[in-house]
Length: 453
Ligand code: PHE
Image (cartoon, rainbow, N blue to C red; front, side):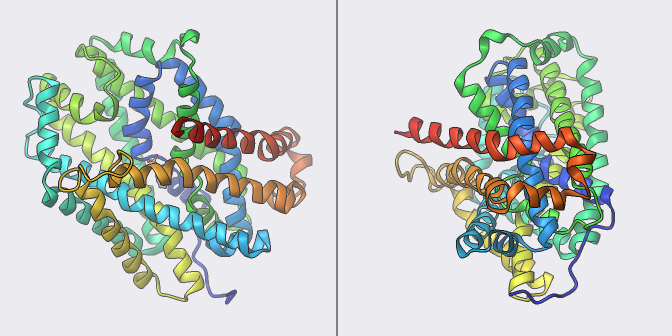
């Protein structure tokens, strides 16, 4: 298994930061974050989310990057080497499969965004009178198998183009261009939002917490969001860590990723809610927030056409850098363990993700009503992967580091004299990796079992 051949690596620390940030910022931060904030009380949810990032997100991210960086292997080999047992290697494999499954339906949703970008370009998104009109428009598009499958296919093709070029010239170079571009577009949208009439109301909703609104559901949603947004629990960060050179400082590379990811999500919140309040809409529109309300916004403001194009362009870029990060663990597994070339591995995995994504495409039209326990194919596959496999994968990674390998080894590999140089950080990692993060993840899983009984 351990044939050593030249392994790809990031060119620089900044390259790693952009790639990891590209993975983190995606549909989760741009499409999901605003609507869960809207549904869970606004500012108070943001406070809970920040607490979860500190207690779970950051420590699990460090654990995953550390596993990858130390072993310089895909999650399968990495879990195997550190866990020194078959069952740990199996856990590593499970995280790879999780990433692959997620990539299959993530691409379908991202495909809608690509489809909407084309709609925006054709000037179709800035002429609606009310949200129900916008919703029917979305339903008309997504009820066509050709539309959903076609854009899923195109999005996979885009991902292949980036992945073909490898770690440095594809993922790193792509993220380095796409992330700053995305931040630029986002800043423009924030500026637009802040200069609208309801800006103040939007900012109050986002930033002045009402402590009475804390609910158990909001806490769980905040935990889930912290996990998903950092691309944890499914091999991505282990794989990205494996391309990080041993001389780079892990904590120093990860802190900017977490901070920037949070700032981008918050900016997105500002952009969305200043606009939503300005046009007199409610913040609780749920998953349809983008498709139902934004086209109305585009129709009401001047420059709506340009804004709609910019907006969907931004989401497509963000989703692309995330999609490639969900596919990469499986590709890296085939390169490491099966000695496959990058091109072949990419084609194989991406075709697999395309095929597995087809039933998801059809879940919005042809097989919408074919359900098992009341849920259709997409609902089942996304629930199993995001709500079960991802938390389990993250739990395994952090347990592997803190209990199986031991914190002593972890600190040794985090950097020379880590505990002496960074005593506070070391204490925080010790407590969070060993106790708080695993306990809280278990809590999410238990609540899940309770609520589905
Ligand atoms: N972090 C991504 C987002 O916020 C989601 C993702 C998870 C992407 C796992 C890749 C892998 O959209």
